[in-house]
Image (cartoon, rainbow, N blue to C red):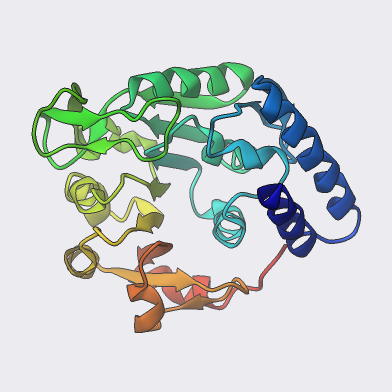
Length: 280
């Protein structure tokens, strides 16, 4: 019950007007359905269809307009930078689904096999979307790696250093090898549980050609931010953070803070991104 009250309070604080009532009703419906343990199909505010699963960490998409609101709105505001969205660590595809109406093409990478099956279902619910999905690990060299699949569409599945009873072997490739150069400019999102540096190193050709016009990645405590920063410096990119009010900042303390999403863009485009107006 305490969790339910927390959900209702968050919805009330993060919405305005009729959206408060709308999403409070949705959250109430979800609390009932969750206890029944049944999944169902729902439609997001942008028209995309999703499967709402009782066990999924993304179930809250059913009763919130935007997940990771400030960062999602920043991505949507800058979708004009490129026609393609590349999602490395796509999980079941629900983050990308929030962008189905603003990008033309999607390239989605998800290594966990059970989660990849759910990603394929998300795409099947939205057949009008131009999307290619890849059941591989994205890293800095092709081959194979041991992978811990936490199952049940978990958001914590990750690369393992050694084999164990809990690991499976998953094919590995680089973005430079898999993502065709004729894809043109793209926006890149990376959520790979601390392996961001490997993804970036395996995308060096794309970065040198300035094809990623905007990059968003999850910065965890195990992310080696110093090496990631060095990579972006070498590629001519600027690393920054989007504040709670939607403004862009390079404040060192905010960039260094763990458990946030960080962004990067070519240095030549940073000034434009930093001075654009915010739109809800």
